[in-house]
Length: 190
Image 1 (cartoon, rainbow, N blue to C red):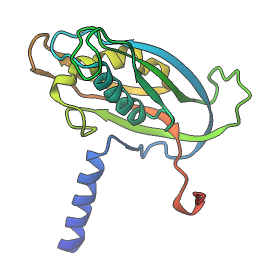
Image 2: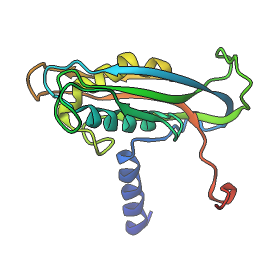
Image 3: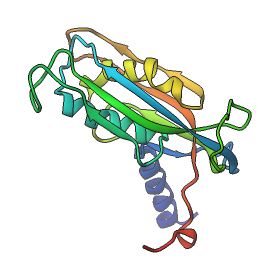
């Protein structure tokens, strides 16, 4: 391999590693799935980081989309005692989102099938770029309360949050069954 080609391959691999998710090489064949609607009130309880209700809602939307929720996912701040933009020990948000159910899952809906495949998702500090080390407890609670609403497999959780300290670490990766993005030629122009 020529030096320039080798450098391009390494650079391309480095770019892919920085993405919040990338298509899994083991299972990139499209399979039909059905959207399932979820509504959930996420109440954050943490010892290290305090969020405003609107800040929590913003972070949760990033996690939902990165995990494979449909692009119209909504994460709205709940009423907070301290108001918008101010840290609140009892921050919460209302989530309304759709996840793609795998074939064979309880699909009691008349919705048309959607093409999906398995994608590897990884949450670490700065992946997605909006996450920081202080989001460790948020990742734990997202894993425990929201992730079960997704079709996931191969969960690898190396999360060790230390309460009242910005220390510890988190690395949560999993394969998520998500909709296949249409190829550029298949996209309809608006």
